[in-house]
Amino acid sequence: MDLFTITAILVFLSAVFGYINVRFLKMPNTIGLMFITIIFTLAVFALSYVDPTLLNAERYILSQIDFKTVLLDVMLSFLLFAGAMHTDFEQLRKHRWPILSFSTLGVITSTFLVGTFVYYILMMMGMNIPYIQCLLFGALISPTDPIAVLGILKQAGVPKKLETKIVGESLFNDGVGVVVFLTLFEIASPSEEAVSAWNVVELFGIEVLGGVVLGLLLGWVTYRLMRTIDDYDIEVIITLATVMTGTVIAHKLHVSAPLAMVVAGLLIGNDRLRESAMSENTIIYVDKFWELIDILLNTLLFVLLGMEILVLTYTPDYLIAGLIAIPVVLICRYISLLLPISFFKKKLEFVPRTDIIMTWGGLRGAISIALALGLTEAMNRDLFLLITYVVVVFSIMIQGLTVGRLVKKVAPSSN
Image 1 (cartoon, rainbow, N blue to C red):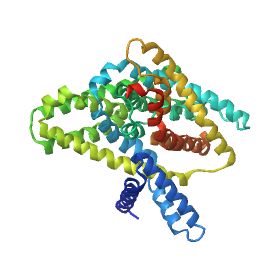
Image 2 (image 1 turned 180 degrees about the vertical axis):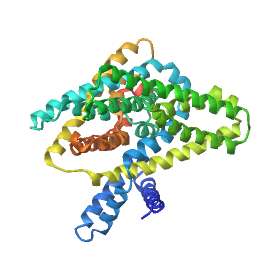
Image 3 (image 1 turned 45 degrees about the horizontal axis):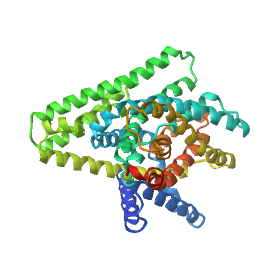
Image 4 (image 1 turned 60 degrees about the vertical axis):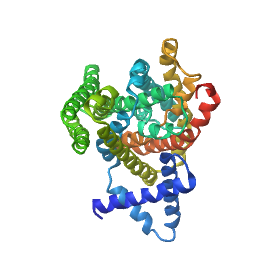
């Protein structure tokens, strides 16, 4: 089965599952697609006792797709650029300091809190897992997923000023989270050379600052090019080239491609700049093009995410650890938000119970799964992959479906 056939099957499944969701279930697309795919995969499991053909075909498709590479090296750049382009730049600028603190201090704090709690929990369960590996899990599960967040908050009725904080944080913290994960991964990997504190700072600094600088450069060049012409066809292609070329450059320079795409997308999507660079017609076509890219990739992504249930290793201890991890991750998320919210509460308007809403609305998604898949067998990949999947499914299915009701209950006057 070649790549085109596999892609055609995935698009077909996405279309069918999407139709079922819109026609009958009427859930937010990200939740509905993942739910239907999981049910479909479980049905294929059951059918395999009679005829394993479908199960073997699904496993073959998954074996031909490197989910980690497809998401982190391909899909993520497009999704983050599209999400950043449609984010309110002025609101983001107004709340830049709390967003920055959430996406840096918050992620790092949560990483160490989750890692420490999980280390002692697993030890009490009789699993002696090295502390650095638990920190790796903390790093991959701490960032909220902009792909899941953007898709669900649109339908959750979250107040605009709070939505800006949650979306802004999720756009930046996955880039920071990936860098934290890669830094810890470097430390955890067996090596003859010891990794010093300076090596860690250098790696983190180059990835983050390099990504931001590259994003600014890409955004500025794209803006200058689009300003000199008025042809929506070519201008759409220019934005596409920005994402694809920028991602290749980021990988070659070993800087953060996600952060570069977020910064470039915010710059190009800035109302002041886009109005001086694009005609009204071009703005419509550029926006519609990236909305379509966003919807298509999101649909494929959550179908793949549902199918990943096939690659998990199920044992009672692993499942129990995954269920225990759900409240642990939520508690650590809540604690990591307390300091930034308390510090900025008086300077900026925060809706009532921002801490509770941001804790429950900080969804985990495909990025966490992709990073967990990137662990090696020596890093207890099977254990942490199942724990991650349990947390992600709970996050999307339960938190995603109830965040709207939570907002109405704790902050009704803010809607």
